[in-house]
Image (tube, rainbow, N blue to C red; front, side, top):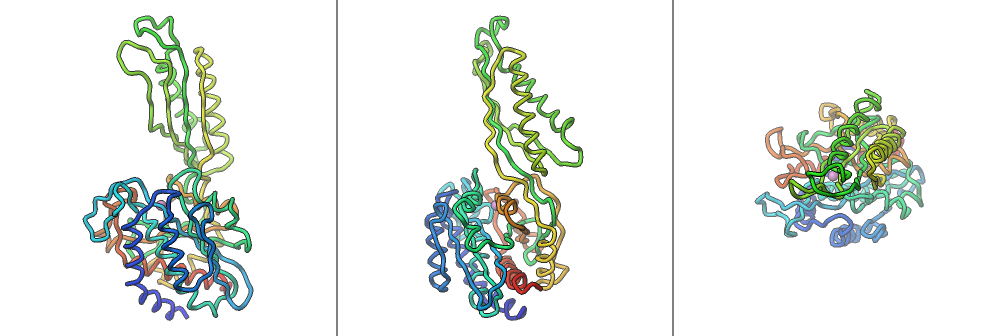
Length: 394
Ligand code: NI
């Protein structure tokens, strides 16, 4: 069975390359993946796999049912691209100016279509159901995953587990990376407006200077990380934007700050947001200023279920050989796959995409990002093998 799937996946390479290059040429921004959805739907039509489209706008959910009832496993891919102008001079360069698949979501969608084909051709061996989830908007808050869940993607049937993969230029093609337990951080945006009282810079006594208050707040907020968080719970608070005033001799009315809070513990995450509000409000009050704070909940922590990850890693070792499976470090970046892992056991793993640790080493979100397309065979084949194995309960 394994050799059959490996052979099928290898034979799919030309088709996978064609699919990936089509998607790469026609990238679409988050929640605008209309052509992408229709392209995926057309491929599912060609295969004969039943699906529903238009879920959460541009998402697709498809089901492959085996002859015997059993568990249900969901396989997920994200489909959106980034507002980056591609700088690769390749035949499949983006035709959508200023938009690029720089995070490899074209690869994820292709791997899931490949896995779908392999599973569909082998559906007589399936003990249970495979649910395919093609989601929009991974790159943009509130995250397509949360909208897919709201739209019922995890119902009828409720999957017992979900797995997903992501390109990883730090590993060569043919390799996969796994990490059980805490893997990726939560990410919450923090928007702060400090409202003071403007005036002449030579007469500070008649103003409430929001610039000095902002400076104090930025320094004090870092002490949440150094003094209030548990030293063994990684936490980052970074402000990437500060804006206020224009000239040397005018104190402005207000200053705006925008930042991101990242951590690995859901209860500490809530407490850290509360502390940010408290410190900002108290600082402002101490100097007669006021604050407006907007901190919409972002992506939760991504926790890879220990038992599921051990199983999927085991299937991958059987499929590729143990030498091709590598451990991963925790990452402060975030992924909306975490919304699924809040609902059901999940395993999010990495697909090596460089070539022999020499080519295609450029990180994601870079205008020069690209992959060794041999990785498509590994991604599609492993996804299919993992789903089959999970349903057989081996
Ligand atoms: Ni991504």
